[in-house]
Image (cartoon, rainbow, N blue to C red; front, side, top):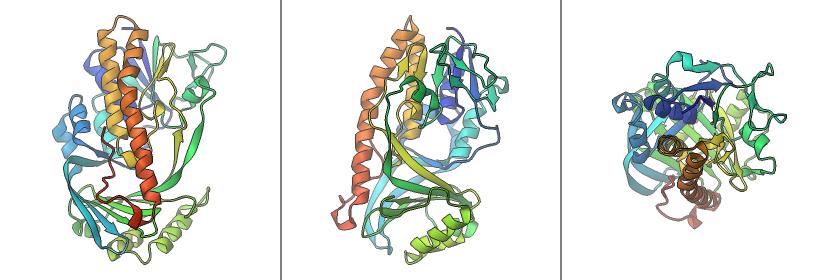
Length: 359
């Protein structure tokens, strides 16, 4: 197989690189961020995701950096238990930890940081560096995220829309708060709907929390500062269950992340000419699915297998798309169902609904 350029060193880019490295493909990764820029949030990994990860990393290393969750417990915002469900091998890990683990298997000389690539309209199918020179490759795997600029340049008629939900995500180090938590997925819901707070223990001293907002009911300004966001969180969650209120008020906000959620109105093809898309660059999934990482891993596995088995690149791309698209469409539909449930008043929501999409 000829030289492969991978655009993006996030979860999907490093995952495909792990599979390519395992099978001795000639590849190079180009990442626009600096090497030490590990901002982000955390992920839930169902058992299936762990199985795919275990093919390219040592699972014992993975398990050192996160937690298996025992139960999903659903609460009212005042702390009344509404439902409980046992979780089967669902793992939680921070984005920075997973990126660190995945990158350990990639030789340093195969990743270039601070490299922004763009699609060239003069020579369609070519990518170029900021200095105007072209990428030397025979195949391009694009994994540059949900708002992929390369995807937009190639599929000019695509339409992205905002989802009726925003998230505020934070990872904090606090032994006192972590000590109060068991290894459960705890999620609190306001009785009027459209507002929730989730808590996940990553380790003995680290906690991931996130809040979900109906962005038509709870408006967060476009250019809010960390201080104004912190003040807003204090006000919104002041009268919630004491655990939630204590976490909100006891957190450092230096790494807080405001996530505005978007989705494609309609999926594009997963490839064009010698360019193929994986992960969020191919199919943005709204966060209610909890399937972003697992889907990226399955994309990477499927694409690599097709490249090994098929005689031509085009046939490999075609079979990869045929294999992955139906499952992605299921997750998109499930995500919209979960979103619609979230927007309803609590008494109208489906009981025992699990915030993970399964195919």
